[in-house]
Amino acid sequence: MWGYTLRVPDVWHERPLDVEGGHGVLFAPDPVDAQTALVIEVRDLGTEVTSADLPDLERAFLRGLRAVVGSHLEQHATFTNEFALGCEAVQTYVESGQRRKRWINLLYRDTRQARLIAQGATVEEFDRLRPLFAPCVTTFMFTERSTV
Image (cartoon, rainbow, N blue to C red; front, side, top):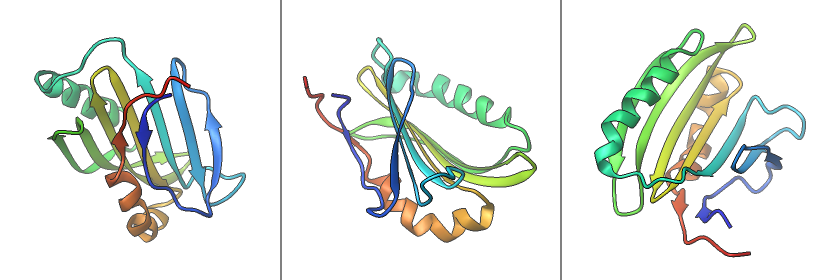
C-alpha cells in the first residue's frame, strides 16, 4: 500500500513499527535488541514536495540532527534524481551514555516521505556493518502504491 522497495538482510528479524499516519518496519540482527537496526518509515504528507522545497528541507533536517545530544555530522548531502529527492547524513550522537553512529536518509516523491535509518549500536558496529547497510540504503525506491 505504501509503495516502496528496499533490500534487507535475509537473516535479520523484522518488527512492525507504529508510525503515526504511516507505515514502519525495523530490521535487526537481534530479535530483542534494536540498537543496531535498519529502520524504514513512510508517510503521506498530504502535499507534494518538489525540488524547490529542498533548501528548506535540508535546513530543517540539519537543524534537527544538530539538536541531538552529542551530535557530530560526519557528512551530509542533498540529491535529486528521477526517482526521488532528499537529504542524507552520517551522524554520531550519544544515547544512554553510548556513542552511536547512523546513516539517515529522508526521501520524497510526490506526497510521500520515507525516512531510512541504518544504525549501529556503537560507532565500531556501524563501521563494521556499513558494507551491509550500503545496498539496503542505496537501493531504496518508491514504487506505485497498491490499493490492497
